[in-house]
Image 1: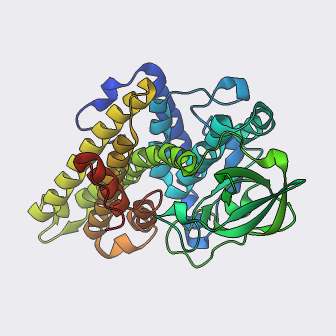
Image 2: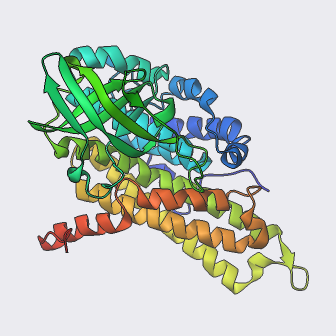
Length: 391
């Protein structure tokens, strides 16, 4: 099979500046050399390659857009997006580790934390010395995070935290959790370190998706926190949703990477697989129609992301722009993975080829950080001016 090449039928790489191209190429090379040889095995074994975390830190893949003053890379949103595309071409679990660390842990510390909190945690999170997780979703509250039951009760020494979070990426390996809880002042964010009495993070097993990723519960049983564990700038559920917008941006790009990997595998296989009179299956009309659909939707998704990245860097993007890109790209990446699996036939159900792994992963990507339907309603409200979430 031919080596992977960036899927770019419209020459969109010409719209990137030299630094953006360098970011994409460096992460692409790292994924080819360090992720692709091992990721199928980790997916099968239900393990995450934690030994790659320091390398990701050295590559600047944690907190990409945050300032160098805190030991972070200080990259543009375009560079961040391109890096996430290449990471998810390797596996959704690798990209999830990076985007959770940056968008859901480091971003809220930088945006809502004190200067002391920033200097204490951000440099070590940027290097990968510390791993973080984000505790918002609960067993009974996924698409409606404002219904959370986790509560932080103030006492004379700080806070007592009680509750449970669910489906938390990095949870069992995290040194630091950003946790959202109800208080008498509304929903606030807290920093909870590993080893705090009353805090445990059991790993969720038996997943058929995101198997090369750590997914956990976070359990807080009279977990006592010092007063300075509060992120002082948090002011309600809006603060948590601001973090989710950062993560959704990375998913919009990442889903394209998975789609590109599946398209490349399907195209190469279709040209090499001989059937029906000694001809490759790529010569058949039905196969060509699938490949054309795949390439067209990848190209459209890339155009969405390129414009969104520019808007993010210009600070003109709204949450609805991010929702449209996440909704579209996660949907079409899932469809493209299914088409690729179909082209590969029986071979497509083995991890010798990438589509089945991406197909399973994309079921989670399609669902998390706002389901397809939730983003539909976000956009529907923007278009009509009518909120329909409870309808």
